[in-house]
Length: 137
Image (tube, rainbow, N blue to C red; front, side, top):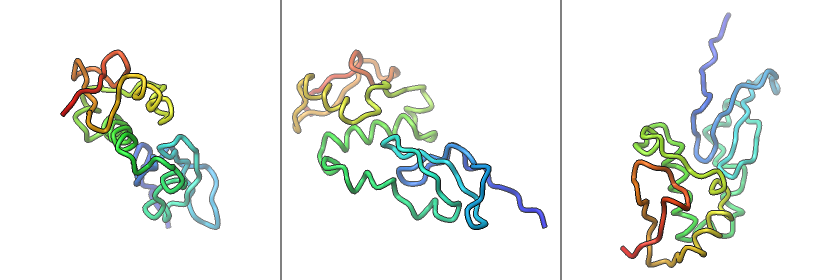
């Protein structure tokens, strides 16, 4: 019997994005190379993809409940989700900002407070320090 392999490359499961199919099997299961939103590479069996939320970073990240972290995470999702208008318009996230610490460093130096929200000067451009600022709601 021949089984067809579902193509999952580029698909997101919670905070994990599938990079590609591994050539090896683990106890008879297909294994996928995946990347967590924090950047960590993981190897996950097919039947575990929907069960695993992240590499564990969501539980460990001490700032994951803060407003600034939520804004950063939302921007990342908008830029990477193929169904998002931001993604379709070609909006990108500056490479440095993939790391939360770098985004936070910029945010604090640019005047972030919990009363402000992020604004892009030109909406069809990506999220980067030259195109973003913090403004009151």
